[in-house]
Image (cartoon, rainbow, N blue to C red; front, side, top):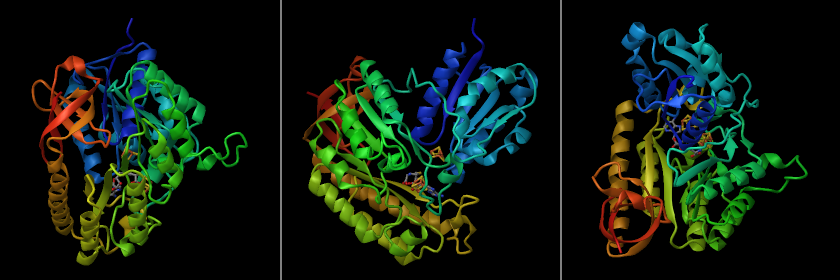
Length: 445
Ligand code: SAH
Ligand code: SF4
Ligand code: F3S
């Protein structure tokens, strides 16, 4: 008999997708069944994000919708877990009495039991991470994934970089690498179950293994080794990783990418700013010229590489000239895609305490300007691809458009293809017939 029904909704980054998939496996394992809709579920689990204020506001407004339902039939109850749960803590249960479990990202392992216990009554359960180094992890690996054809594997927890704008080190705690054996075992299982593509994920994957130094058996086992070992798995078509940090992006990683047959030539290398002054104040630990040199080394080793970056505009104290240096860096590198964001102050971070915040309207104006510039650059990169043929891994139905599947090239460009749903999960040759700044369109050949 089913213990009850649960519904999971994931906000934020791929690490949350992975955590949501693991929670799903744990709940199923305890005899719960997953509901299609949130209305009518006994328990709703929100896996939340704190990276910007907007990410938190989405969850707050979604939670607010359930007052009436809760008052009339006491369903669904909520478990709010992850980064925002850690940051907001107990206040959530006071504001929304239907929130019965609040758990930080290092306490996920205790969530399924807490949900089961809370159904039997009693007060709200708070599982906030008191220590940034202790970890009550979910032992299970995801059984079903949000997408069975492209799977994520978290290879490290937390982050020790402390970029001055960023909340992640405070909510996710200290950096720690998963043992290579458990990553490899999970990867093998995924491939055996039909995953064609695996993405290794972490806030800073390149520092994988930095914490193994004191273990004589693992000392020296770093990210490049892990990448090489996973890429050897028989049957794995494509291997990716994200996110990289310019400081730790060493040449041995490029060597593995250049020699491996299945490591995709696509790299997300967040730059955050093109100004040395802003980079210093962001505590990014590299200069503009060092970043550009890294891009030069990458392009020399991987001529067809797809390059993306993350950029923040309107960091405290950023002048128009310094903003212009970010624009000129985009013009110079010509990234395939840029994840742009207007700076959002996060309480408790050093940047949020500064008195020289850039006015909101200036941040918004800079964001719109940089987006327009990058749209022109991306469109200019994509247009000449019309007529070319690429191997595309079709991985899911396109979000819009009847009969369209969506896939990616090795360089990580999105391609929309008219194809039967049965082709999902297969590699196909696709001729490009159209392009925009955001994606390509193509036909099967
Ligand atoms: N670990 C990765 C990504 C971290 S979060 C890295 O080091 O780049 C993803 C992106 O969110 C960041 O790259 C950054 O561009 C953005 N971001 C983080 N904190 C932010 C803030 N306070 N305001 C606006 N954007 C932010
Ligand atoms: Fe945040 Fe910097 Fe860590 Fe990325 S590297 S998660 S931006 S502190
Ligand atoms: Fe958000 Fe936490 Fe990921 S703050 S971006 S969910 S690590």
